[in-house]
Length: 528
Image 1 (tube, rainbow, N blue to C red):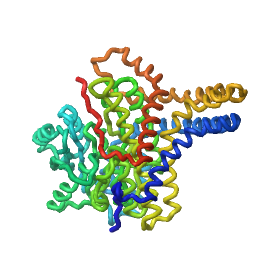
Image 2: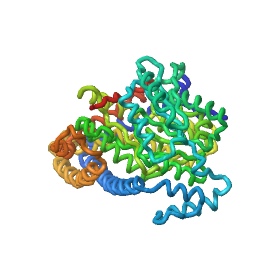
Image 3: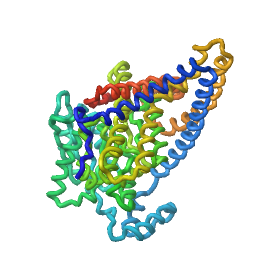
Image 4: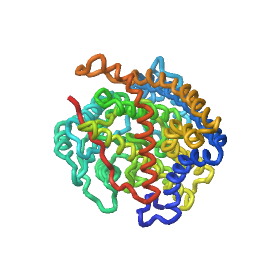
């Protein structure tokens, strides 16, 4: 079986390095383009900038529409009686009155195409893989309790604590205590300590891969079919919605070829949203909306943070990569290349609730937020992996399928690093360099009007931000709600500093081969 692993730094040839340089090179070119065009011709610069702003105005309208559609769909799926739908799917008979129209269509499709090869809902075994590093029981305990409180039979669910044994790890005592407390609540609960392993980056991928191999041994001893096992990875602070496992079961059992699919719930950063500082609340809410939007665009959907995949597919990919700090998104590409492009990500329209960034002081929180997004932006390293594996290594994927995937991936990272800066500041460049030019003087005013129209979408954001808020803790007074509105004045600063600058930082490091070999775990402070 051909390798799908990321080559070690010393094994990357000049072709691989070209595509590592490419995202940063394009980013810096685009950022400098308004300056160069302003020197050559203020009119040319103005046309470029106005065209760019209009493009993003149209995109902003589309994002607002998608976020409203996604929110409505998520609300419907959270209130859906999934257990009744699963009972119908078990018997392939619609007995639930008031079931949505797509339910009957799904059952008909299963009867026609999957009757003799399907997995019934009653046969599914769920595994929850919880990665831990230095989290305390105050963080891990609520996560485990949220799993237990889900509307699902816990005797069909295995919990695996994957905890680190490397320097600085402090979760062992908490994990062992929780295993003892909950040992009778699930089908099985186990804790696996990940040792320091040469050749691995210090990150989550090696940790959960080591634990998954121990899980594989457990399943083989009990003769559990890995094709009927669904593994969901959770970070230490992740809390699944009570409908998550039932909704996941239904989607998995109605997927025609589940081996070639993974399943992506909607990460929502609302666990501690009332406690986080205002800039972090803005970032957390924006990230939540973006995940809702992505759920409505399946062609753009990739594994991110918490996600689920069948155990037999994980075995085929040798689990997750231990050579990258972005093992979640990278797992999509590993699976896509393992199965020669036969792999899809299906959205699960129910949330996995996560923490907004909150450390032990305001200064540490600011730093931790930048470090977290910087780590996410390291996903630009997948550009070179996709190009090299798709174009220069033997595979059976047609080029016409590789090119759109590659270009969407590249464009996404370029927009991440450049759009906030260009939208906010590009219109000032011709004016500063050509103050005598009429068109350069008029450009900031024209740009301002376009930006004002685009910012009207903030009303959609305000509406949805209050819809996703959990109940206000009793320790906060009414005026805290007012700050939830006023916090949006931070939006221009957070998008530039914590999104654009973080992406530029990661892409520039990648350009110069200064690889990130350490997963910087985000602090999980808890307010009581």
